Amino acid sequence: MARRRRIYEGKAKVLFEGPEPGTLVQYFKDDATAFNNQKHGVITGKGVLNNRISEYLMLRLAEIGIPTHFVRRLNMREQLVREVEIIPIEVVVRNVAAGSLVKRFGVPEGQILPRSLVEYYYKSDALGDPMISEEHITAFGWSTTQEIDDILALSLRVNDFLSGLFLGIGLRLVDFKLEFGRFYTEEEMRIVLADEISPDNMRLWDVKTNEKLDKDRFRQDLGGVKEAYQEVARRLGILPEG
Ligand code: C5P
View 1 (cartoon, rainbow, N blue to C red):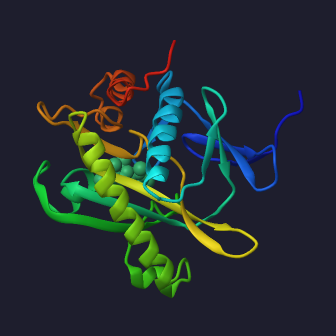
View 2 (cartoon, rainbow, N blue to C red):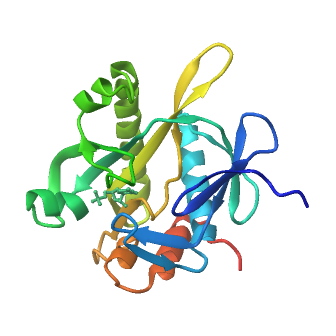
């Protein structure tokens, strides 16, 4: 069998050349990293769960008119996506204080934020993804004011929709990270949601018990990482067979 060309390998995913021009195959690995690569582990079956969870969430978001790179799931570990030009910015939306917000500003973990906070980080492993402002984004030419307006509006719509979706299954969407790309057609360029949406890049707490059902179980050595991801998939009604 011909080996596909590997376009990019990240910490938790690999991108291969797709079957048609303008497409890529996104492969979900079981690897987990934290603290800018200082901690590494393998969570057997995580890739399968994240592939399904991300497929489900991208499809639900597309239904409400959020443009995404997702085309279709190909198998247990792979999905077909549109090739986009990734904007080198990570957008973090927060509803409840946790993680680096707690560390940076000393607010107690679990404090409900008076309004949703949107933060931007520059995607750079070498620099440890520094937090940036809109000023940095435009000054360094990573994106334009118009694009940032679109990205912000899309991120807030994603937050509203996903917060409601997860609340409906007893989970609080504490925070999450999104990435966007430029998708070019013959006529126009559109900003689309890219990458993945899974418990690797969201914090989800059980509404009743505050139990963490996301990658913090790995980061904080809480155990039961795969079981937590399985529980999210189960509540979404998409637990993969086998
Ligand atoms: O670590 P921090 O509190 O800034 O993370 C905020 C949210 O963004 C968390 O849900 C985390 O999983 C996600 N994140 C991510 N990739 C990064 C940094 C944060 O998915 N490089």
